Image (cartoon, rainbow, N blue to C red):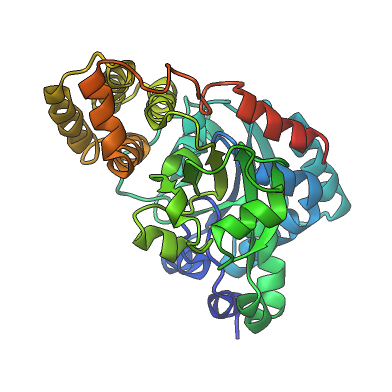
Length: 382
């Protein structure tokens, strides 16, 4: 049985956000023929997510071993690791691991610090010396990737799990865990290894010491999927279960927002993040994210009119159908999902002409927010 068959039996899925079966991705590259390339994606950019940097700092040897196993399985003669320019400590840890296990040529790249640089085609553009802008698709990297060659782009946490998955596929499948960045209004923000299927409320209580202000909102995948209400806290930490509930696990950046905070203030914070991080390449994203953020600001402040909700849904619907990458689609879906969870809050803001919670009091997706600063501190203490 070859490595890809063993990987398929293990059930390993990618940890970059989509939870796509790793073996299928490897097989797609192999099927293209030619001389492929393997790229490790360490350009972690989700607000509140530190699990990829934690992996590179604490499990650099496993990342390198997984990278080399992927290259051997595909017949690649070179590999690359892409990180944000700011990730000096993770880069140093990987360099030490590479020096300790010479063999395959592995090139380490420190690129842009933008959020979109972590998109798989944007990072290929950056490695090739251009601005980290997503490429139109198709073609996809498995057929036309780095320098036109078939390319496997795999998240660093995924690669760190490859050695265990290949060693004993059945055992890996039976006891599969994932890293979760738990942040927000919890007592102990940080990274934890959690068994898939654990109820979200148990993850918060058992690993992060519980919520400090009750639970108002749960974002299982950071900003990349609609949030859940407190009543949905018994849902499993599982990508399929969360997708069925209208949310998603994404990079497992589990944000807890306290019950006393205004959901629409959080919606404004979410939309502002997507507006701020739009790369500027395609008008549907630039215009759409700005339009969505503007309407939500008015809604939260109580200055929006009922018809503005129609304009918001119209703009979001357009964003969900257009753009080179998933940025616009994700932002629109996450914002609409949040509003759908709290129709009474939306009606109260429009009807009262003000925020009944007293104003914009929670901005977790802002740069250097208190919530992000706390979990970044947890990475520094790791």
